[in-house]
Image (cartoon, rainbow, N blue to C red; front, side, top):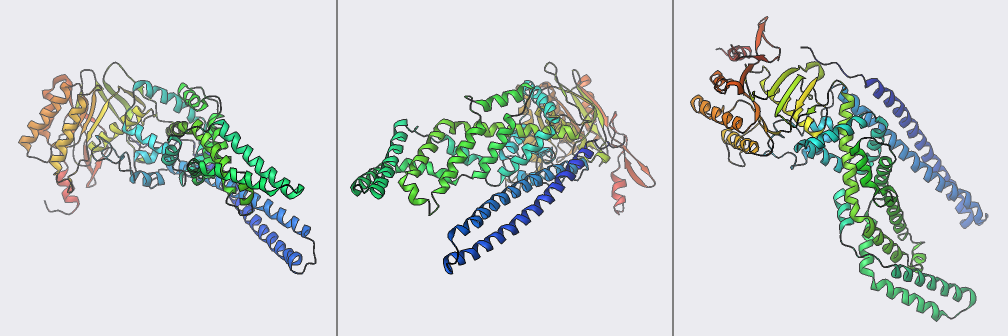
Amino acid sequence: MGGDSAPSHSSEYQRRLDLHAAEEFALERRSAQLSNLRLLVFAVGAAASWFVFGARSLEAAWLAPAVIGFVALVILHDRALQARDRAGRAVAFYEGGLARLEDRWLGSDAAARAHDRPEWNDPHHPYAEDLDLFGRGSLFELLCGATTQSGEETLARWLLEPASPETVRSRQQAVKELAGKLDLRVDLARQGAALRERLHPDALTQWGSEPVKPVARSLRVSAALLAAMTVGTLAAWLLAGAFAIWFALAAGAQSVFALFFRGRIHSALSAGGLPVRELAALGGVLRRIEGERFESPRLLALQGRLEGAGVRPSQQVARLVRLVEFLDARRNQIFAPIGALLLFSTQIAFAIESWRAECGPRIADWIAAVGEFEALCSIAGFAYENPDHTYPEIDDDVSRFEARGLGHPLLPRANRVRNGVSMGGDLQVLVVSGSNMSGKSTMLRTIGVNAVLALAGSPVCAEMLRISPLAIGASIRVQDSLLEGSSRFYAEITRLRQIVEISEGSRPALFLLDEILHGTNSHDRGIGAAAVVRSLVERGALGLVTTHDLALAKVADELGEKGRNVHFEDHLEAGKIVFDYQIRPGVVSKSNALELMRSVGLDV
């Protein structure tokens, strides 16, 4: 069977890419022009300053146009840079989409970040390494369009922990809706990308969730009154000749007040270390989600989680951003004495503490909601880019895995070969025989990866898939461990024990066993393999077992209706071994081991 054709959305990606690339180029030129103009205005201002303060031939008013012009250019330049960065993030989004459509997506940043997460790459997980969930060329790399840590963590958790049928169906509805909202997915990616480098969700969540005593309204009123008294007595002293003692008393009372609450002030002022621009970006992401109209229950529920008590999270984040920006003003040497008179730091600290008491506990939920939106958008992007994939039917009643036109989503479309597989009811085990390199291991991974996708709420690489809630266990890439002092055989039997334990759970198991027990002699292997498979079948598990040892094909015969033999085969063409990777009924009738050895120059 030939390979799949590429989806039809590449032209839309390319059209949008060209528009944003042109926008990015134009904004880059504009920012360069504004930078040069700002430098020119600064030079003119510096020259004018010499005539005002040095030669004293000009009035100070002549400096005003230069100062105003310079400040305006700084603002315009900053806006141009931000717009350029947004255009650049859109370019990156569409470039990533085209790379996936053209099967040149290996080596993305998502793969590198996943490599640094040991909790995702746990060698003891029952299927993560065996099915290439993380790392270069992995399912996570193909899927992940998340730009925040929360989004990546949510997507990874979905791949590692199969969901309930109700959750799968609700995610499917959400993904179907989001797949058609390309503009929303682009906007979230553009704004979310600004969060990655500096905004650390764990630190922000911890800051928000730390116990805080709400600031009494009387304290905030007292701080405002003390500041008003200090400013008022200073004005009376300077302008009306009042006694300086009144100003001294007011300033002293203000100082005692600030000193008494210095602990709370110091705690609140730690918010000054929060990244303002990244917090603003978080507010932008929240605002974009809040403003979208949804129909699927899961997306509506996520929106409802953000609504809270009626004040939108984006507005609350904007309020915190303003407070943190106010804090930055106290570092200005010109403003510092004014701030001291106004009890500025204390009042802002009280305002931040009040914000944290009101909104801090909700930060974790906001970030989690953004993470779930990003995870859903990642899967929606996968659905959009693969319109030939299908949403699986989740069967609650009967243990089954029935697929037609099943292919491996990580393989290039030109090389992808599809097969049909059916297990369930009386048939529980397929024993797969075949020669080397004929496709047995790939078949196991194809089934496993599509099961992971299906139970995460994603479409699958198949024409049709009916699957029940299954607990997945695989022994495909089990290796020895020098550090743990275990052999390959010991590692395999440990994994087999783990899969048997999984089959004892509330969900039926889907087991994928590649070359079972090939690390021991054929006699022990036959007895052990038959015992393990029988044990799994007795527990209601479904699965496949691959083997080179044709003696193991008898396992299927011994199981009666519950087992069946299938195989892959090859043939010679012009002295070369050719594989078609099609699964066929029965036991393979020949081996290619000798031909392969001769093809690499071994004299056998």
